[in-house]
Length: 514
Image 1 (cartoon, rainbow, N blue to C red):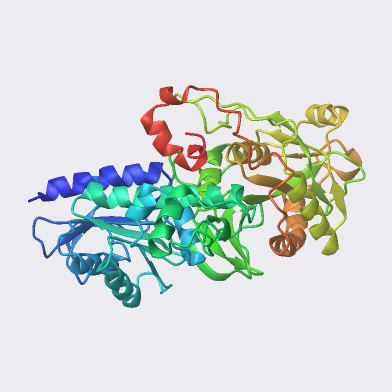
Image 2: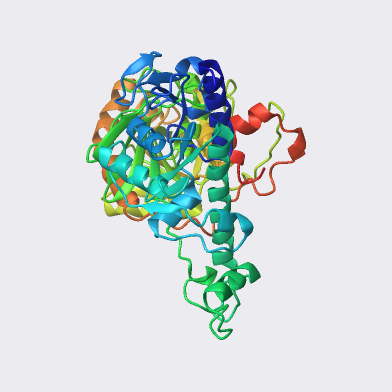
């Protein structure tokens, strides 16, 4: 009989492993184990960062969700876990992952053809129709599916596996995802209709149908798999004056945690024009953070964790060119770094990576962004160099003239770190720079006054919101730009030398390369 201390230890160990493999998302998925009292069980808490759970975060609950021990809120899927134990009385552990590739199979209602020995072992895996997460209907459906199998694929909602031990449950979840990955590769590389099915699949078919004319080309082979992509997600970093984004539907606010600490504020998640969107005010609501105080790494990492693939950074800037008047919009394509106190990389601590950054923004997203702003009536300058200064003071007049002599176009205090980190995170990035003043080089217009900046910003905030709405409806394909593959040849550290803690913490960035 397992003790409660052993149950808690095993949950944390398996949670860390599954998170490092990308099978648990930052707040998605849950793990449980029967307690020493078989009518109770331990479970991971709700809405907590899965990469940093401790034993004291776990809760011991009754079947109805009543907390017997612990201070956190139990996972909303507690009913599904108890239904799993009821369906399989010999099970002592249950794992619910948000494994991305196996989830795609559930979305497209695909089963596992026996292309390898693991797939044969998993052939009894059931697909459970979609029910509202956390509902009794979902729990009942999963319980029914697990009476015939130790694993189930939940449509649009990951996997549920059980085992006689915690390791058994976790291993089945890993095998399901790995087999789904193999099938995905087959679907990508076996498109020709005249290709034969793998030998193992042919052998299985012969048992059911000895006619050789039908073996190897029967419907339902690997070549016919169709995988649905996960939901495209746009991230928006709001700058001075842009602290919210009206018009989002189905809004949810999520407090996130990252290996680099918490982001500037809660993530605001919803849908805009049918596109999933995540909004984050970089200075925090109420404009609480100086540019130097912004936790840029946590902000970008939090967006990466939640599935963001494009980022539009909205930023107030000063103009360094007469033709860029206050109220105009610039979509810069270059940066100059004049910051001195900021960390601008996720790497270090035992892993070294050097990404290409010659062209620091995504050309496809920048083009869509410029077109969207023009469509909303803005005067748009496509291209230009953004000087990123430390702040919080504005420039001296000598500095302003120096930057002009360099050929720079606008000056701001935030966007360069975001661009660098987005590139390391393989996220497409573009800046919507709202010119608010002429900096201090243009003495005919006076020196920079914060009152003037805020007045112009107020007039431009609505423009920025409308522009974001257009971008959300016209996200470009992530092809033809360096963003999605930025780490392909960037990591130079021997993989075996990368510390386990760094592997685990940076799993959202590194899992494709380790």
